Length: 168
Image 1: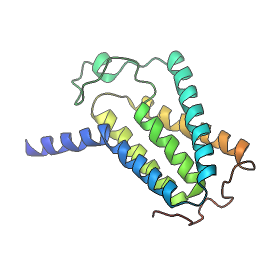
Image 2 (image 1 turned 120 degrees about the horizontal axis):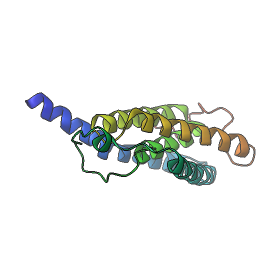
Image 3 (image 1 turned 90 degrees about the vertical axis):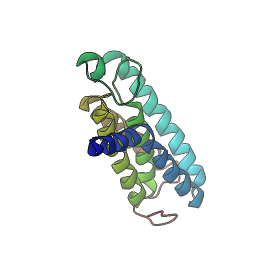
Image 4 (image 1 turned 120 degrees about the vertical axis):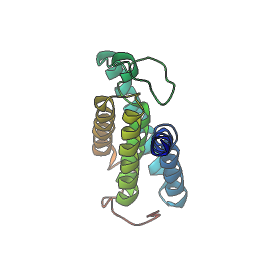
């Protein structure tokens, strides 16, 4: 019984609050970087376009949440709306993409957080795997496109592994 309570607590933390760690990593990286203008511009473009693409796809891909379609009891109360895509995973994946363009280690660390958040949200019964994977794909695809169109205009390291301002 204690194991289940511990696991439930861990899953709830990952599903509800782990995204805050990703935001904290991004803020700390930003504050330690000398390329603040490039990061802000790239981040705004990337996050806004990621959100727009996700909202458009949300109207075409309808995936009821597991607690609606499968009648499971979620660990977290949630509105019975469309589960595609996972907003938490989408946000953290977009942040990871921005960080990855400036610092691979920080970007990979935040991608790992995005995956952990996705796993937690599936285990919490509020998303299906397709919602999580769709969020990762959307965020990565938009980041690649934004990078390709802005890399010569914004201050983005040609070597993403550059250690300046490295958190890790």
